[in-house]
Length: 163
Image 1 (cartoon, rainbow, N blue to C red):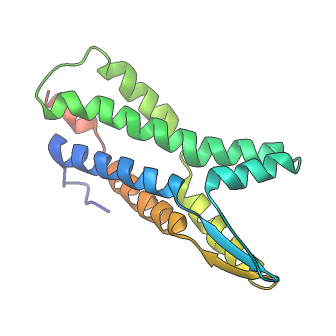
Image 2: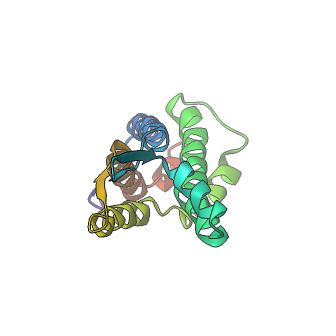
């Protein structure tokens, strides 16, 4: 992503974080897969797929999908915005240290890239049984994985010292 010596400004990181929020919303509101079988057609979002897994007794799969692909990225993006907004505006924040610690802890649970690969593999495997196409949500999750990787690569620790 970014070289070790290259550091983005707080404004650049804030812009990337806002882009991550927009792409995150698109990813979660768009269908991740379209399946057609015998004239029937169905689209589903990630939350819809997790709901179906829950209803079929796959509780662990449903909870892990929601936790790692929806909750963790949402918290990570929110915490990045909480950290970067005041820094970009040259203000101090009483929550900065706590937010940075929480962001470090939450980043371990963010697995958007794993979800993207798993969804694409699933579409290919389902393709033998039915007409299956990756939806725009999968592309948005792939873009989100790239944006979050860029943000992780850029880091925010250098901003701590420049306050």
